[in-house]
Length: 146
Image (tube, rainbow, N blue to C red; front, side, top):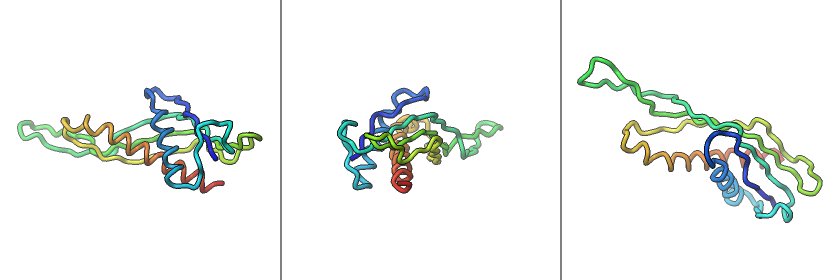
């Protein structure tokens, strides 16, 4: 049995720790035989995490010419999202560290729309995809190492 308390957020992104924690819990339930419990006191192991940074930057641009202008504009079509994370899995009673990574790095490209009207509609689903992808990478790394 494993407990996954809410991750600590060391970034300036508001409440990003909640969906990331929920995604990791969901991934443990879906992909492993681990039973996730809500109380640390009833767990055999506890997974602690700190979100150290979350950054996004344009990675691919589409250069489209404006027919009514002599200049070209470049719009980002792919963003590179990078999450730095500190994770530690420890036995609850002994505090023995089972797995630890002080600099877990998640980096994935995500395509975005170049249409302004759909950009804001995509923001929520795009973040949800990122949370799921992050959780899949993290849970795979943790379970492969112990």
